Image: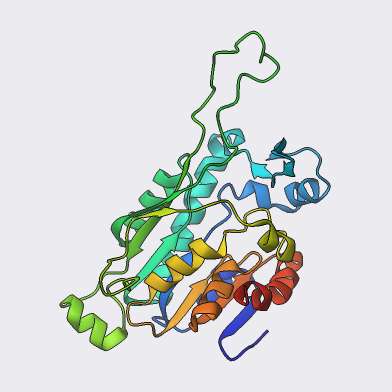
Length: 284
């Protein structure tokens, strides 16, 4: 699907990136499938049926039904290694298509972020920090399953109140000013002349209106995505790539800012959803 500002592709991102010309994107902003397992055909069928699998359907909170959450703690040793191998392959593909000095913002979670960072550093990326999204979710804080009354004072794991986004930069030769002039990369765009881009972003859960437009279990809010995408192109010029597009929140954020974007999605249902949702989300 093509538009004057964006292009959407139904494809396997690793295959697509391998066939694409190298050094062709100024930035990548993406939210990968963090367990791999949760987006297999089997688990997606269970998710869409609201029954079983690793997708936990959280309870109603304050009269509102919450979105499903994947239980990453159910991954076994082999699945965690498969995730690390996948991240290595993705980091290698990202290194190829990014221009020198290009940044990648990659959504993570406290249970698996170390595997993401290890893979990207192994491929030669320079870690530039982590963007911390301050958000309270329903993940964590539970008592032992089927023993809530017996262990009423116990929390199995901390209630999550933040989401880490590791930030990496492709190496380049010369000075920042040189790569800015040559490739339009190497730095981050400031929200204003007075304020630098910060590594802490307060963020509410995705608004109900956005979820109605794009009912994807991992949909990120436009307020967050527009802040990240804005920062990704230091001169406000270039193209942002999202290899794991989902419902298109990254692409929509880019369109809202007047940036060019490319989104790739392997799931046919989510790809069709993104085609409908991107212009609507961008228009909010």
